[in-house]
Length: 150
Image (cartoon, rainbow, N blue to C red; front, side):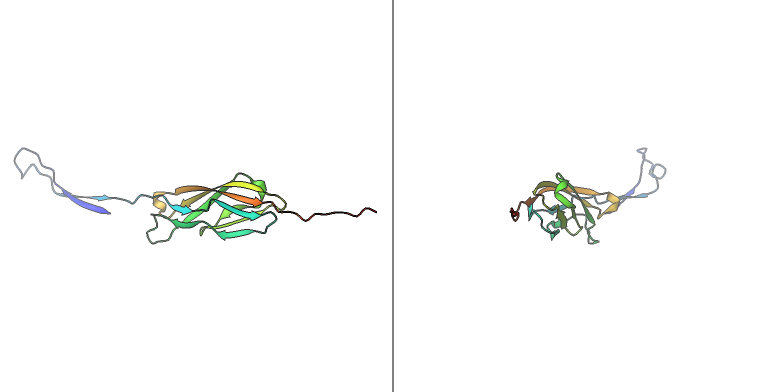
């Protein structure tokens, strides 16, 4: 918001006619600050080895005190502790949709760091918040193979 103040400078000499300045209006503008955004993630997502591409909205409650009705403008960045576990690395859409594809024939876990950037108030700069989760690619019992001896 803003506030206007009228200021008159006076000299203590006692003669108001010659010791006062003309009135000046000062305006103070208080700009809103960029508040920290928020979102929620599950602690773990589990899929089976050799499964197809994963796509599900798991980042929920995406919000920001900076969204003044003009639309929330967010983006996500991810890092993984085990990139070999993925044929397509984990990534999030602005709407919270997680996508990734496990590497065929590999099981294991990966710690994922998910950072959301909020650019809803560009003049105030970006605000970030980071959460962590784990993706587990669970081993499956592969079909046994054999060959006949002649």
